[in-house]
Length: 308
Image 1 (cartoon, rainbow, N blue to C red):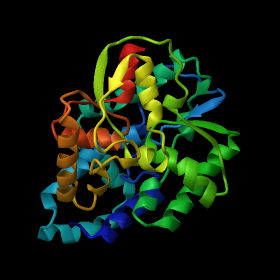
Image 2 (cartoon, rainbow, N blue to C red):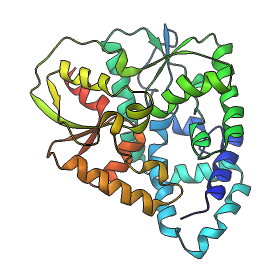
Image 3 (cartoon, one colour):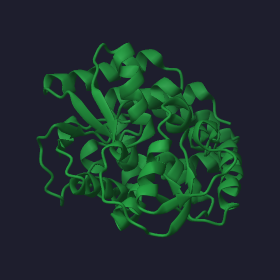
Image 4 (tube, rainbow, N blue to C red):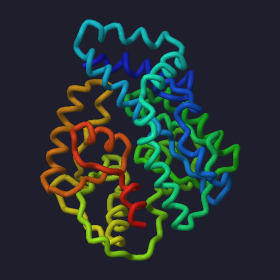
């Protein structure tokens, strides 16, 4: 296990310098929208929070953490916070394969497609789409989180944004629960699958749904994806740990202890695979972590877009 203080100081330093926990410049990480010609204005602002975009970089950095966990080199990790954030971030971006970045972009494009097909009036502005800072809060750097969150919220407020669409559970929780409490700024927040509207279908499929902790336990939104799937004739297999009682995928622990994260992930993957049905996730952290187990897993947006 790495020293948690070392990890949070590195992440916090990166956020202060680059607005990204990994130091990756936004122009390098957020490219999914460039060939879509999305409108800039709308009733809602699509706000990705960059979590799906960060997924391949999380995987790449975790590979190095796995290599050096509990070795002598782990003790030197804390000194990387002294490097300029963009220096390490650009290096990480260059080491990450283009095909992995392309895979990470697919759920984002699928979500935009689903919203458009549902005739949701939304716009997308890359200049307003920033990381929420949620990882700082999760790891105990409350002051760092508040400082960053105020900058993000103020920029949205100054642009006249009142309604936003989030696409992952971490960003949704930050904007629904934490931003009003700690920044003084509040927004009307909807998760993308709450706004979808399709004619009923009969796809005749059955899947196993992995509920992320922030949706299942903290926001109690796990019924909504099931309703959307049911409307398409896609049934969801009941498993022991689901909804409010869902089990963690292990992803949140990977920056502190990849070994512990893998143990949790393998346990959860076995629970999900026991049904013998394809697994569906609706969180980029869960999606990436469960894929590491070799499980047959796809994002909810991809499944919905395929049958919409």
